[in-house]
Image 1 (cartoon, rainbow, N blue to C red):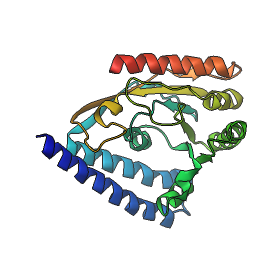
Image 2 (image 1 turned 60 degrees about the vertical axis):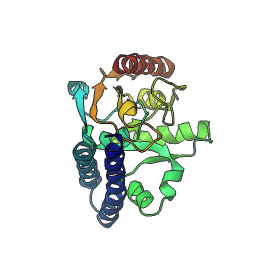
Image 3 (image 1 turned 90 degrees about the vertical axis):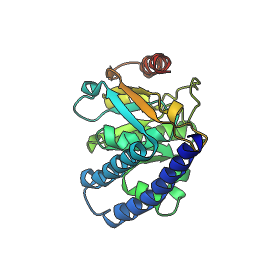
Length: 237
């Protein structure tokens, strides 16, 4: 059974790789479309691969708290423990601009497609300059009607672990006068950050109540988001 699950996991990963290349070609070819319509291609990519994941590996998901997604454009903060949430977020939330490391933009074809979707690509070693870039570009994206997706720990962390939460997302939300929507999930248990095997089961995604950031201290807002996410993470594991 373990060997079969490994085989199916490798098959899914192969399909994910090839499917991502095909969708990247589509995004680049359709880059002239308005961003909302172009993002529909990314949503289709996400939904297709979530379906493949369920079909091949027996790994599906449930979502709690959809009612906590407010109208308008806001900042979502996700726990980052797996590759799963990088796929799922496009299917579960309104169109988002992703805060990501600039090196991802250098990947041939895939990086070009990501660039077309208006991410905020930062140099994580740039410190204050990177935070300023998130605020400047993030404010513009919010005005354009896009959400901002941030993994506040900056990288994937193993299940049960945590890192310092960067304050950039809270600072952006405070300056822009919008909300932060925290998201917790247990995808890292089923799809570890290292390893090929995707375990069968049900990933639980919990969307938390929006946190008002307008006219509030960003450090306070960031701590509220961190506390909610980490407490919920412990409840999910």
